[in-house]
Structure formats: structure tokens, C-alpha cells
Image 1 (cartoon, chains in turn blue, brown):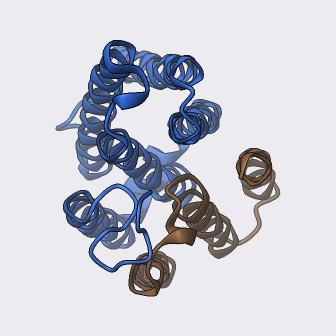
Image 2 (cartoon, helix red, strand yellow):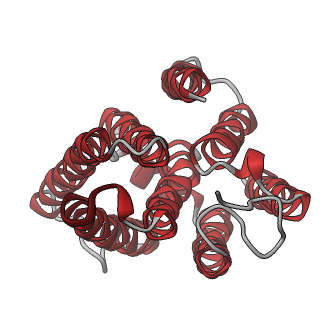
Length: 189
Length: 76
């Protein structure tokens, strides 16, 4: 049984939480810089934000939240020693994660077609860098979930809970970043 | 445990849709960021199971996120 009450053993492991905070600080600083520059170049940022599809953003938020829900469910099922259900939940989480990447890639395609690249203006420089790095994190997260799923399929209930929790924590981190990134980027200006 | 996870998910989806409505109603950005902060906390405490963690991790999570969102709102 995990001793979450110990300061040295937060859910997911202390190493993952150090990584999570480093990532949140990095993305956080970038978002603060985005807002700051937005105040300096208001017209550019207002027109940039107006060109973003808010519906895509809302759909992506729901996709990531749904994926996170199923990852949390997978952890619950594995704790209950139900490997089959855990794998099923991970399948759904990977599916929703792919859904997010698909919608984001479609958005990137539309932006590229409209001529909004990395060097278009300051707004789009931030847009591409912030969402691009987030996209990479989501992709890596999906790879981690896939490896975990295969591990549980092989080892069943004896698969290490710490490994599943660590992977789940990384995935939820991607969600946490998006929960702040979406309103800051799409809805602020 | 199962029930709280399901409830949290429903609340998260509801808050996401509410954010959209608040935006279209042209209500203050601070309100949107406040909802984002609530969602951030829900994911952390429910999905990441921080509710079971040592108070240090709970406090750090609450304070860090509040500071980040606070800075964004103040600058915006």
C-alpha cells in the first residue's frame, strides 16, 4: 500500500513531482511573458487571438480532461487488482489523447494555410512555441501510456503501481499545462 | 473513490463549457482564469490524488497555481 502521507512519497513519486514543477515553472514563465508582451503589442495580440478557433480549444480541453479521467480510472482499477479494466481505461485515455493531437494538428494545418507561421508576429511566435512544446509533451505522454499498457498486459496485477502512477502523473501534467494555456492564449486578448 | 472521480469529471466538463459561455458573454477574464484555477485544483487533487498526499504537497500545489494564475490576471 502506498504511503502517500509521507512527504517523500507523493502520488506519482517525488522525482516526477520535481519534473512536474520544473515544467509548470517553465511553461508558467512563458505564459507570463506572453501576457506581458501582449500588453506591449495589444493590437497584434487582439487580432492574433481573434484568429484562433475557440471551439477547437474547448474541444481539446474536453478531450484532455476525458483522457485524464480514464488515466485516473486506470490507476484505480490497477489498485483494485483488475488489470483487464486498467488496460481498457488506458486504451480510452490513449484514444482521447490522440484525439487532442489530431485536432491540434488540424489547427496547425489551417494556421499554416492561412499564412500564420512562427515568424508572422510576436503573438504567433508564442502560439507556435507554447502549443508546439505542449503537443510534444502530449505525444511523449501517449508513448508512456502505451508502454505502461503493454507492461500491464504482460505482467497483469504484478505490474508496479509506482510506474503506472508516475506515468499517470506525467499525463496529468500535460492536462494541467493546457488548463492554463488555453484561456491565456485563446481567451485573454 | 469511483464516485468522486466521476463527479470531478462531470464538474470539469461543466466548468469548461461554462468558460465558453463566460467568454461569449464578454465577462471579465479574471473569472475565466478563476474557473481555470478551480479545474487545475480538481485535476491535481482528484485525478492526481493529491488529496491523499502530505500537506506540504497539497499546500505547494495550491500556492503555486494561485500565484501563477494571479500573475497572469494582474498582467492581463
